[in-house]
Image 1 (cartoon, rainbow, N blue to C red):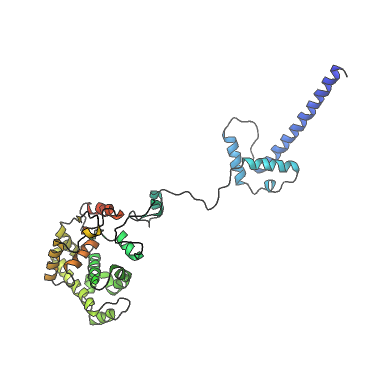
Image 2 (image 1 turned 30 degrees about the horizontal axis):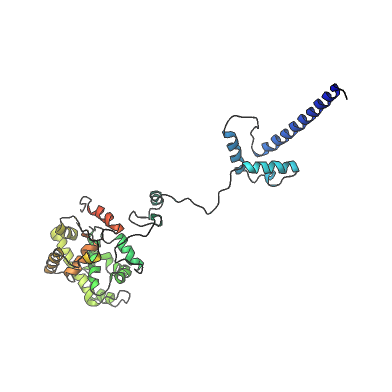
Amino acid sequence: MSRASVRKNVLETNKYLHEKDKSSQSFLTRHLKKIYPIGLNRSNSSLSLSSLSLSLSQNSNDSFLTEPTSPLDHKISLALRLIRPPERRSGVTTPLPRNVRSAQNPNIQPGSPTPSDGGEVRRCNWITKSSDEVYVSFHDECWGVPVYDDRQLFELLAMSGMLMDYNWTEILKRKQFYREAFAEFDPNSVAKLGDAEVEEISSNKAMTLAEGRVRCIIDNAKCILKVASEFGSFSNYMWSYVNHKPTINRFKHPRNVPLRTPKAEVISKDLQRRGFRLVGPVIVYSFMQAAGLTIDHLVDCYRYDECVNLAERPWRHI
């Protein structure tokens, strides 16, 4: 075979292969236009592949992708799946920062420990693993927080008086019953309760309050009204004993926390002089701790710094 004949055969073969390849590219372009109307011309843009991938992921239900009708269609389908972005696994979430979670969920209080804090939450030693949830919540949300409202102070004074018969857990579990029976501890309403209401409350087994204890609460409501008329409010009277700023202690161990203090004894004597009942020095100091007149959280308790920050704010009582 001459050199001219060999050269002619090579040129004819190359021409045939070029035409076949051109036909395949035309077929690919024609079918891709069914998915997304973009050209497949060469481009130097870095967004071309990502734009195509996004388009394919948004049109993944196209029949051309799901049901290939020929071997070539099947190959194209496989090639397109390779450039599609991977599907996000369901059920896998990225943990959000604590401040973002608080913004999304207003029910999360700044002082409330969250699972993301890591490690065990340090509380006062008298809060143990066996402590009731209602008692833990009282420690985390109320105990040691300065209170300036007369109704709330009256409620805490009444519940502190109940410590003569019950512990905090038993009292807190019945708190809602007490609020309903004593008109949300509105001194004006409680002071008007008569014998019929006393009998009804004392006979309520859900509260288990003796008649004498009920009358003590009613008498204290009357005394609070007298104090409020003299000092402007019961709150103003109580906070004047600490110069309207909580006493901040730095106790490291439960044994350091007193049951009574000289200040509590002074307040107790004056309350008794004004006609209050169930206001001994121990009860008064328990009331001062609960109402935030004194900060007795242990220094390694997570609530200590938070209550101290509240105590150090400018006096805002009105």
